[in-house]
Image 1 (spheres, helix red, strand yellow):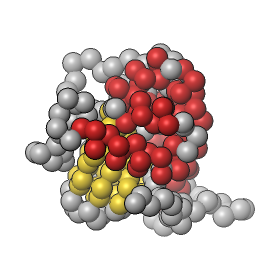
Image 2: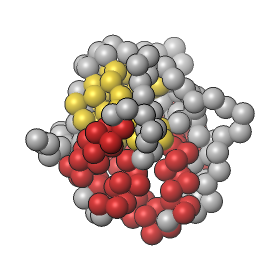
Image 3: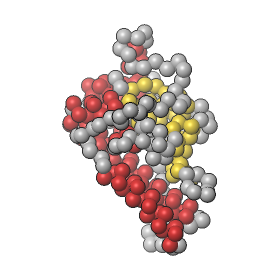
Image 4: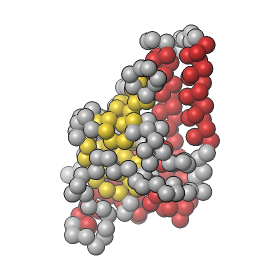
Length: 232
C-alpha cells in the first residue's frame, strides 16, 4: 500500500517583513557575484530546446553496484515499473499528470538509495538526474572561501533534489549530502528532456509544477548566504 508524501516546509522561512541586513562592501560584492551566477544559469533555460552535455559521463557516485536500469526486457522490470508509477502518482508534483504521462516518465526512472553521510553529488558534477526524495533528509550546501560549507536548505520526503539538469551546461550548482538513509526515485535527465521535446504539453506542465521549487531554492540560498556573510 502506498503512502502519500507530504512536504515539511518548516526549514524555508521567508525574511521577516521590514528586516534589514547591512553588508560590508566585500560581502555585498560576494553576494552579488553568487546571485549573478544563478541568474545567468536561469536565463539560459530553454524548455523546448534541450541539448545534452557533450563528452561528459554521468556521475555515478552513490549508485548501488546491484542497480538495474529500466530495461523492459530485464527480469522484474514490470514490477519495478509499476512501483515507480505508483510512487509518482503519490508524489505531490505529479498529481497534475495523467496515468499515461506518469508511465512515460517512469520509463526514465530508477530507484536509488543513499546511506547516511554519503555524498549524493558535488558541485560541478554532471547533472544526469533529478531526484525525488521518498524517505530521509538531504543537506544542500555550497562552499565559500575560507569558511565551512553553507547549508542552503534541508530537503525531505516529497522534495525534489537537483535542478541543474534543466539548463546547460548541465552541471551541479551545489553539493548534496545524505543526513540520514535516503530512498529516492531518480529520473534520467536526458530521457526527461527528450520526452519534453516529444510532448511539449507535458514539458510545459512539468515547468508549471516544478518552477515554484526553483524559486524557493533561490530564496533559501539568498537568505542563507546573507546569514553567512553577516556572521548571523
